[in-house]
Amino acid sequence: MASTALSLQPSSTTHERPVGVKKFEDASIQATVLAPKTRLRIGEEFELLVELVNAGNRIAQVIKIEGVIPETLELREKPSIYRVEGSTLNPDGKKLAPLKTETVKLVLRPTHQGRVSFSPRVLYLAESGRQLSTVSEPVELTIENEPSSTNETSTVVWAPPEFLFDTGEAESVFAYLVREFRRDYEERRLYVDQAGWRSLMDLVRHLGLPKRALYGEGARDGRVIRELERRSLIELRIFRVERGRGGEVKRSE
Image (cartoon, rainbow, N blue to C red; front, side, top):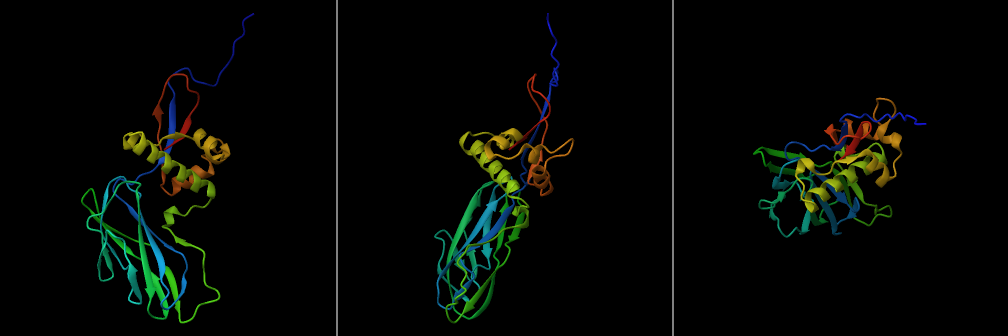
């Protein structure tokens, strides 16, 4: 006797709703300062890193980086491609492609006792022709005459607020999406609009996240998707796909 099986999969054409990294329409450089320690003594050489990330969707040309050599600090070593002009570094037209990172290494030496606020300002020209700028969160340095027994040796990282996540889950998802976008764009040679889209089940499988963190319950997205959407770091799209795919599927870029 034949039996009939019921399925929740629609027989007509279905849609996929992917989620991916949201790229700013223009170039958008973010500056972050990495300091090995923040308490130093006069004459002690130390290293600072200024990390530039183009989080935008167009090429950015770095014009100059201002405020990298405060008056109480002496530059001991500069990046090879940069020219020093007072307290400013000129990169001679350094270009930064979308989702690319440039790390500027500086070796400095304190010359006076006191406190120093290190907060470089980056001026850059977007591919659209607009001249833009960004300022890093400040790092406070304390310069002493004698070595301090409480000298800080752990790395201090200051990042723009939009890249400080509420949960490690959201951070891991965003990092995964960026890696996948770069793999598709650089290795597989896909167009920008086609690169990096992944389903939420890809995130579940590759990152070991619980489904509820992504899919949520009912019509509400999971906590990870809500956080990334709130920070405008991802975007959701609906794609028309082949007949026979079941339900609404969310994917990531």
